[in-house]
Image (cartoon, rainbow, N blue to C red; front, side, top):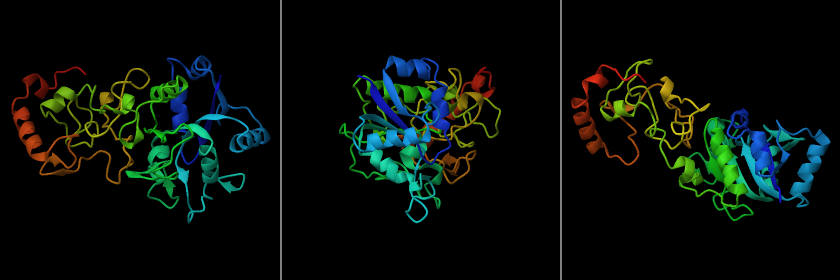
Length: 312
């Protein structure tokens, strides 16, 4: 039996959709056919007229059409003043449509950081929030105790945008009847059980604290240039973008776009620190041991690393 999927775009830029379309192994069309997924609606794939689109929504929200998977892209907009009228559909706040569709869905996937945690508008007058989290706090739009028709919380797959292979992988797992195991912030462990730092080609520089203070060099970007790779969960250095690269591999610090508080309120290219030691340390480290370890590591750094002879 086909799996019915409805993709709803709320307060976002559409970047997660375009990331999805970047999938190549398989591409979106082959994936949907292979998994027998019937797209009831996607704003960039569907060719329904506006009235046909309305009728699809009526069938789903009235329970006349089964909804297996609801994908929400973008944050839920509640402003101004809780009315939600900054983002409307047919003259009504789209947040009401989110609620009506969520009430019918067997599985719900928050695609991207905005849908997961609120994203760029979470601190602004648009009153953006995630489906089941508001930044780090459980709750969000649907509430902390919400479960979908399948008895599960919202599956959060953050990223700005979310990696296409994570979207495909999550939907594949649902289609196969094995929804992904979730970890912190309801993120699938399969893709968010690792740090961005894992797989980074600059790891050896980080290990010996060979740090850079300006862009364009080969060393680690963590201590001075704002890299979040050791701080955040994600697969950017495991599942490469376009099958070949990542931010850190081309010399750009990881911005930490999978974090619940992304985008942060401090500069992207500066590391906040105390006495030269980053304010935020790699997950699981205490400051005293980290300082001792890094001091010894820097003293033991191989000459080839200090001379930046590594060719990647």
